[in-house]
Length: 212
Image 1 (cartoon, rainbow, N blue to C red):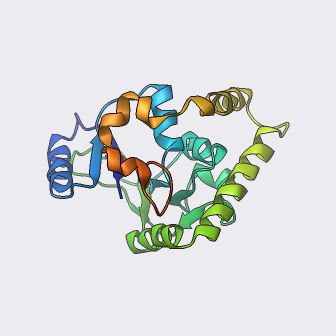
Image 2: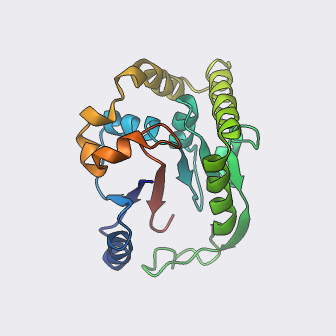
Image 3: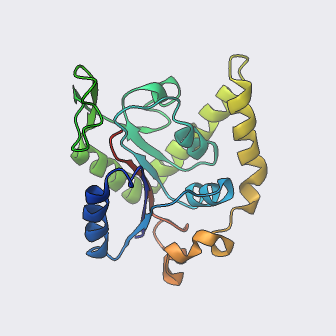
């Protein structure tokens, strides 16, 4: 199982970056991406993954979640914030948690004493990943429901033209998504390209943004 972790905002939090790097070094199945990816690289990564895990503390639209749904990559995500406009228990695996005061070691929220964010239940997220891994029929059902939900939203009159165009580009480019020819191919070893259980390239894609 290969787990790809996408990091953001690490320059502002070098100590946190060092801790994650040390954690990844002790776990050979973890790959860290600490750089911006092109749209084609992101397309390749998400569509080649077996699951997208995003335990966000807050979210605007959650475009990456909708993009994963569009290409049939199951989503495990926080049951909180803007993504609930399209993420449901039928098309995603929603992770419960609690809203707590926002605080991080960098002091980003010092001027917002009343700010709050979401703390997802890690144990429940692990259970969701385990279910997707163990239950092929359930994983296929979630993926199908997600794709249907995306198409219904895409075709609705209220859907933003900007987002609509972005997601339609995903559909036209999906056939080009081949991990073995992508610049991110160095993230995985050749044997990881034929995982017998899931049958696709990556077991997981996790987004981790410090302070968000």
